[in-house]
Image (tube, rainbow, N blue to C red; front, top):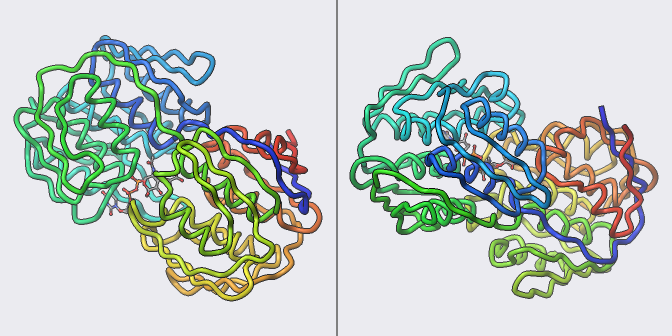
Length: 417
Ligand code: EPU
């Protein structure tokens, strides 16, 4: 199993290019199940979760071709199965995104029920309730969700909680449903707009994607399309935090600053200098970091997927910052490891108080999930001495060659195989 070794204390300089968004590519790949024609996606990051989704689609009978340069073609001409098996879903809960498209196109789906994960219980009850409202019969047997519907009917869907993959699942299914579906309290994340753009290119009739109310007028069939995936806003934010922590000055290219409003504003509050271009950021680390409180919220609020990285940053600020996690109930798994490196963090339920600056010292640490791993990489850049991060496969699920990209910026980082 790979490890990552970092020797901290080297400022970053140079340019880094941001990859395509993992959390946009995953639903985009599933959307290809809605059409019998090929769908070609560009700017797909070659990360482990994308490969896993490729295996899910292949298991359903789609032909999936990964080409060089981040292009993926999915041809779901005829599906040979409607089952997303346990082995794949257990490694990646986003496999549940196959449910909506399968139900809409094949009238049937059998998807292993995802269990809890490292960051919380993460039920999919809201997805299932929505499909029931659209006329599906849902049962859970032997650990599998069994869903059936001759043809889904448009419906008024009111989500109690903002759910990203729930919104995506219903959005995809509604494209082939009979009549109009309106999603109320829909997630507004840029990944939703990206998916809607692809679906529209496939012939779907959608209005309001990216706002809390999305209207979808079902059509009889969707055709093939080509689409370029948006840049990864969490990877972008992670590199900004890396520069702020390690020191130095970098340019982050091929990103979408408009997708990071809350993150950029928060970083500026802490003293990080950020100049924005249309698709790039120039980032300069401040001499001293100021503490700034943060609360994670659905988009356009501060993303939960940046919370762990932000905590690493606040360990180096001069004073106390309160970090409140409102999206997931168990997303402070990085706290213990940060404390082992010397960070002063007090955790009380969903609130963590970080008081800095403390000198971080490199240590062997273990990653528990994707963003917790990123937090440890960032802490390692700021720490004195050597940090060795175990269970790097978490990092590889969602960051494309983060070690190589950081090395390109001058960090002392290597992968140990
Ligand atoms: N929820 C329910 N019932 C549901 C669905 C969600 O109670 O049926 C709750 C969840 O338990 C959670 C909250 O609603 O407390 C929000 O969860 P959401 O459904 O929005 O999360 P998700 O769609 O499963 C996506 C991203 C996550 C990201 C969250 C929040 C993908 C593939 N995953 O998850 O990304 O943290 O939205 O923004 O898009 C990551 O990339 O590291 C990651 C975990």
